[in-house]
Amino acid sequence: MKPFDIVNVPLTENTFTVAEGRSSGLTRHQLLHPRFHRPFHGLRSLSAGDGLFERCRHFSRAMRPNEGFSHQTAAILWGIPLPVGYRAQEHPLHVRSVATGRERRGAGVIGHRTGDASVFLVTLDRFRTIDPISVWLTLSGSLPLYDLVAAADYLIQCPEFVDARDPRPYCSIEQLTERVRGFRGHGKRRATEALALARVGSDSPMESLLRLRITEFGLPEPELNQVVFTAAGHRIGRVDLIYRRWRVIVEYDGDQHRTDKAQYEKDIYRAEALAEASWNLLRVRSNHILANFAPTAARLRRVLESGGWTPSSVRRKVR
Image (cartoon, rainbow, N blue to C red; front, side):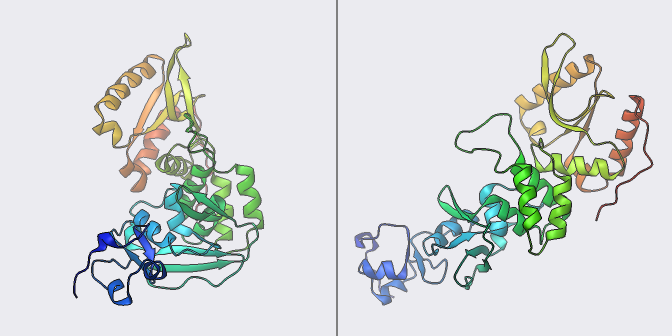
């Protein structure tokens, strides 16, 4: 195909519809030039890129007013945690039509439609999505229970340090409860179960999973992300999971605790301070949570018993 000078084409956007290209002076023949990438039907782009954010940026150029990203696509845009190992680049974009109109069809897109009046569209940065509670409800039909709980924990969490550009929480537990009560879609039962297990205070999905594994093994539920002080009233730090009554603290030991030197030094200081204040500290790695949790549960049980806890014979059944 004969080359042409794209620099002189009066396009205002890096990604544009075929109709916009024609209005800018491009011929049908030129729009088929290999210089233009074709991310979706009816779209052309001057840049490649198959990452989720890049694909969402491309598709937004052709999005109808009543459409927004949904399901796993919207979850990633909102920062909602998904199961470990989920690879967004391997999945199509999820797009939901709200109120009226047909569901979107085409390569690289999974279309959905809803007449639920409680679902509404919001603009998140440069992208239009369905509201965060509706995103969570769309996940209830596919996510395992514990991952759905971790996603709910994320939505209702109030971070210790507030970012004015990212107002949190995205919803309250009361708002989530109201929406689940009126939900009639696929995943209603799992959403109800997840809601009962959701807690305000979890700072990461691994902390949520750790809490759930602990109670799954019949151990008492800890408090979440509480600040610990010395007897003299000096702050030691904020800890992940805590049993005040039995002087036990459980910390999720993520990779940053090993690879970040400053964090590593801080952890050493805090561990020493906790020991001096008569706290028993138990560190847990991700492989302990995701794989065989029984040895970790046994360790925690022994530490709790040494602090005076009496084991319960009741073990919660998890589906």
